[in-house]
Image (cartoon, rainbow, N blue to C red):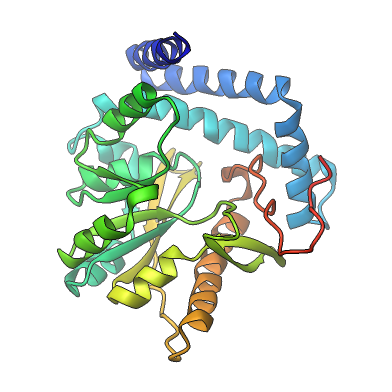
Length: 301
């Protein structure tokens, strides 16, 4: 019964928001996220604590300003997600503009596949969706939602532009197949991971458990790792999807050392984007939750 109720709420929410004009849908999304943030103390504690870790020289006024921006961006993403059925190749340019596409195209032309290095920036669900509408659909790595009906509903929206999901728990063989065919796989690499799945590299100067899978796949396949991040441009009143040149991989012959070094390189790219747009990253996530064995927890709550 609970599974059906969750599905009904998700379906009705998307349908109702989808009926609204885009500005109204984004406004309602911000209202919803604002309420959720206000009533959930753990989110507030994590956001302030993370910002103090990352930017110890800032005052709380500046941190709160960043949090307000974060709430707006996440709320807008909810609104944008509901509008996916309305977005087409003909109108996506009014919402998302591409920059540095030549970097992605050069990597694609190598013929060894592309690993799309990205993170939870701005309306992150919009990045692969727009990329596909521009003519380059991709596969994206996802962690399944516990409610399978909600998971199916969300993926139906995600895939309307031609993208395809790869379940994280059964990903290796499928990723290798896609890359072998010269395809593209998008991987979000900016969240905490378990000791078994990650390596520790600095993130804002603090060791953070970070997925090592991206580096291992890149080293094995020689696929190009191309950073691509979405950000909101207030002057343009639209999103920028910007691609950087492929990250040069370290190859010393010591596989484990190369995995750590390349993961650190990828993480530095992500950090630089967050520093550039600190109000467009979800600070409510406990990025430093996993600690090296024997080290005390960072979070006191």
